[in-house]
Length: 488
Image (cartoon, rainbow, N blue to C red):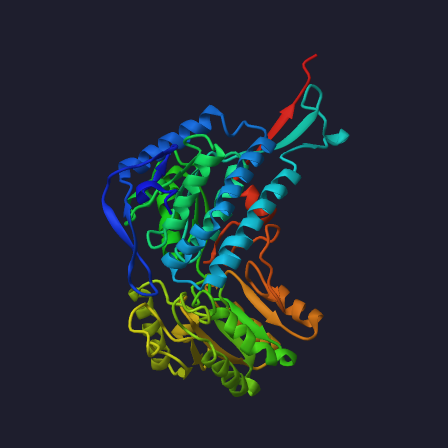
């Protein structure tokens, strides 16, 4: 951790001293992980001005793509060399099990970051279009070119639940495309993102091209979403905040990329009901259900619902809940006391509206400190229950019965959200046919895929645009058309 002087923001190649001090808490035991010197609104305004200047100068954006790639690989090399520090930080600030922090947040994310660089280099960023002979006009253009250029200055705002993943998922495509970026992580888990500043220094990313600003409130974030010098806002977080960002960005007509909330469904076809316990465990293990893509609505044949409830309850009873220091624990805490109270509130609302707690529903015994909540199974009578309508963001899964496949699709699509989904079936063709009917940005049929080549993003209230894949890269680019004629 000593690579980050004074635990402070990194702006235009310099670490900022002073400022209001706030603390980052370990949700596993309520201890203080670190004290952070907050960036002021003035500091964040300077980060914007420096980003604008760095972009307009062309020093980064006009650098050949392979040279940017070389620098970004050096950036990733430094992060890899800091594995022990980063894993320790991720575990401490988020309270997540070590196996998830190291295996997914660290190793998988860095591999995807490198693949994203390769993907960018494989794409055409300037293409010649054919001009049909019968469209030619005397004296008119004879050459048509489509050119993909960087958007400019990007404000990247990331959530608490996967700060390292989301940070790199935005930084690498944005920087590879030639943009200058101000990263503003969640104040609940900002420390791992500060290591990006240290890596930028070592790799030689020019001052102003990448700044990392940390604040305890939202005043600086609002500046990033309203300042005319910012061309784009890329945000991952709640739908409510996403709506506010859209309103804030509207007067300056910024490009806005949003990956927002979800209430994803996992559908079990009759020949795959035996997979339900395994699918339910995946919802809460590692992240305690704090994932926007978590499939927290489990749809099963009505006549086998009791069987599924028993199997899922048994699976949840076998999940050990505890601090990351206990390597046998599969699930840690939620991020804060407020998030735990939200879980408690929705469990109570579910019961008030006819639901039943099949397992869990409270605070686990023997864990006096830390924000723990039991993995919880709710037996819901229908999809209108509050626990089926709203994103809880905790280790709570709802089991709902369906009458037939059409009913399952109707229930799955009967949501304001559309971020992800899952279909399980022994007949892959039948399961894939159901997947095609779901109104959601991604569907996993029998298994998932986390890859630089697999885009993520939502329909409806789950967001705008895509991250990862070619579409994710294009999201950080403007499209210019050039029509060219020869005057001679």
